[in-house]
Image 1 (tube, rainbow, N blue to C red):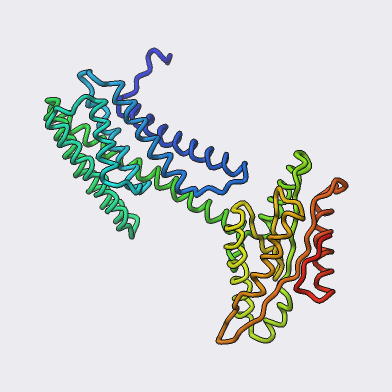
Image 2: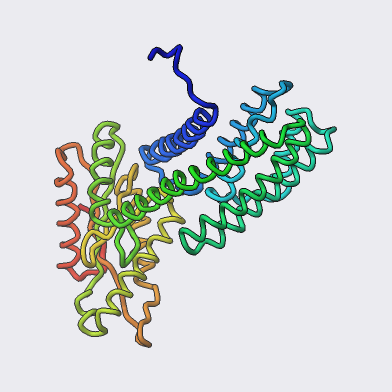
Length: 376
């Protein structure tokens, strides 16, 4: 059969259009997130998906409405508007203030030239109510099938009211409104299954990514993440000739802490040290990252820092640990760190050259009294 004889019902084409809208949204958000990550940024993925989703749905709604404005079928995209409000309220759970939502709808009515129509105002009120009702329904999620029933009942009831207003305004027959409502039910169900699976997949991927790259005890990045980040930083510095400084440090006498105060105290010291230094790095330079690369060994990559530039921060880190209060089980624990610091040099051919030099400097600090910084 040639393309000229192919026939597809409007319901099927609408379904594929909306699935394409969702797929494109997911593609765009993933590309944006990946773009940030390739530039060394660590965006809040949920916030990216939320912000992109809001802009995306507003642009699409205005676009499709302008396409049918001033035609006998300007009601044809009502189910798309329903799709959009459910998506941003139930699935994205956008925190939109009432005045923001009202202003957006008012601007839409200006574009649509419906400010003088009473039924258009009724539609707007129900549309706003739709947003808040679906957010409330989503906040009560507890069981998959019960969630779906509550989602379906709430969305269909509000969709029926919207279609009743649209039917009154455009003089639609009851059969048209009934078929549109049936399609709305079909559309909302497909969207529930499809979007929920996408969101669940993203959550699972995020959890796997976190498990792969982060240490469970200290909640800082682990050795696997360090290897990847160090490799990328090393290659970038060799190409751009920008400085790169590596800091390795151990918690002094950590075995003594475990033997004297117990392993729970040792875990506390590791976690408190990681939190203390992470908070300090965020204040100094949000691009600095702490890694736990061994039992009591940690690492910091100072990208675009010479050893002289990094030294001041390194000394501050050592002092903050030395002067911090570590108290566990009613007992005070004295904690300090030994540090090895080195910078990428022209003669370094591989990452191991830099790491080995930092490691040698660290062990020099440990062999010569600990609680000190050695630059190699």
